[in-house]
Image (cartoon, rainbow, N blue to C red; front, side, top):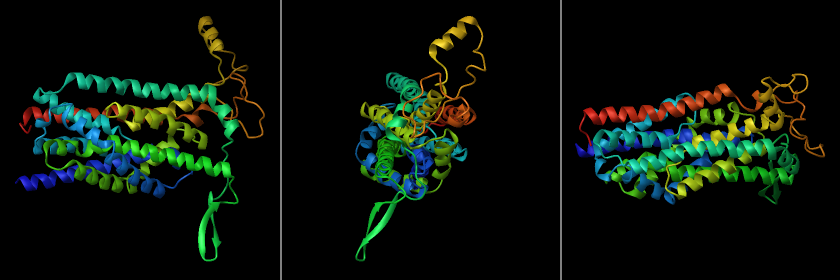
Length: 395
């Protein structure tokens, strides 16, 4: 009976890891895929390798947190572990079916918290610290990128001139019969370097995702003593790989194309800010949500760029007068796209409002769907877990 239950537990852990791969791949490599820097197949391969590396190194610390600090490890009987993982997997599957990158950490912590509340063993101080960072992190991600989008983005665009060339970035030459890669004749060396930088930071995000999310798939089983830590990391890594090569295609489309228009520079900014935030949270032992942080970076950057047609002083004056600015003088919320030929950045409030509309930078309907499912998936996981462990003595 115990062996059968262990098989069920391992199957559910694989199911969770599969959904983690589907969700986190879109967050880590959505900007790179959206800017046509890397293919979906390439993103899946890079996600597999770097997520496993993150889980094998930093991820061991997160496994300890998830497996014994929110609730005592003694609560993770084999049956209880299977129940927790099942709710995590179901909530993530719902999110992936909608093509939205789910908050894996929030969903997993919700299921464990449901177990703790039902058994009266949840550690409130640990939960308070985790939830506090869940509230702070997306706000911080949004405003950092909003400030960059409003005040720095046009300057960076002029400095870097990240215009994409037609055709591939890499070509091949030969020395005798031996091929070697070179920068394509259609691309510049700077474009090639920046593209490598975008992909490299995506790999860093995949590393962070593995460090944070491997625990979500196997921490209950490791906490119960059913499998060893290294076995759990390898199991989760393999499951993440399957998800990355299959259902991740939908979340790659959502993050890379639906939320905002992402040129290479925007992709680079999103990846730098979100990866740095996730690395910080992981370093202090917080189960971090890469999905929330990266997506709020995208929304913040788009919103910040779209507000460049309005000066703060003008908006304040309009608010005091109780009326909007004259539409002929300053219509709408939009921002111009600077070309490489422009010699200086147009000042805030003076951009051509007809060049690029705010809806081209930031899709409110898609964002509402994303935020709604962020709230829904951990809620489903926590409530279902609580009801199960309240009425069925599995822990």
